Length: 251
Image (cartoon, rainbow, N blue to C red; front, side, top):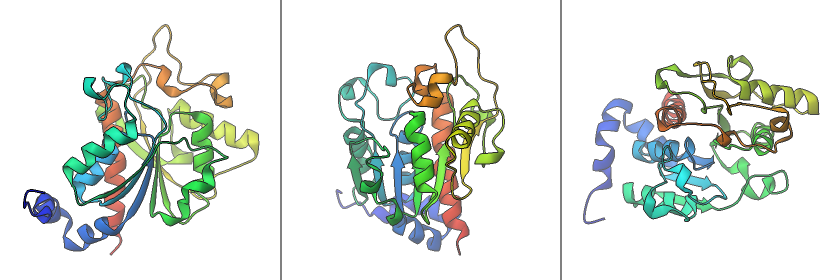
């Protein structure tokens, strides 16, 4: 670490949050699913805020189309695992962090292998509707706090990003589609959880559609639509803020 005191990294954050919160941040265990346009920024914000124990999960590699909005994406990382590329970024921010990378998808079949009950916070930034619904069902059966990203595509105004409890999210077609799916299947989240979403009406384009009949079956991904860093990064920062503020509130 070139003899740099890592305590100095977070001095200005500690001035705001206080030493007890920084200590709890360093001790908290967080698992994040999806290292793309939302998740990659959430991961960086958490590590820059003093979180030290983070597991990141994503099965994908960096594609050229990711460069417009994902922290992990650059010309030099095209073709690389998103998890491995993001780990390098996070360790370069704080080499003392404990970053675990898992290059797998969360599915109903793989759910038990992630041992979600061992974490304090679970972040859902998955773009597959089928797997997102499964993660929500599984995560809410644990004692961990779940924070989920709703639809960031087709928006350009970061000032319209907010948060609400899942059943109270309005104006977001992804949230509405998830609610319909839970009702159709007769499987519901076992507790309430916060979501980050946009209050901005989605921009209409000739090929845009936040949801479709196929989405309910989980065969489409929300990333098929246009999206940009102006909003995806705001989602990621908002998620990180919810985690940090929740930890801060636990005196």
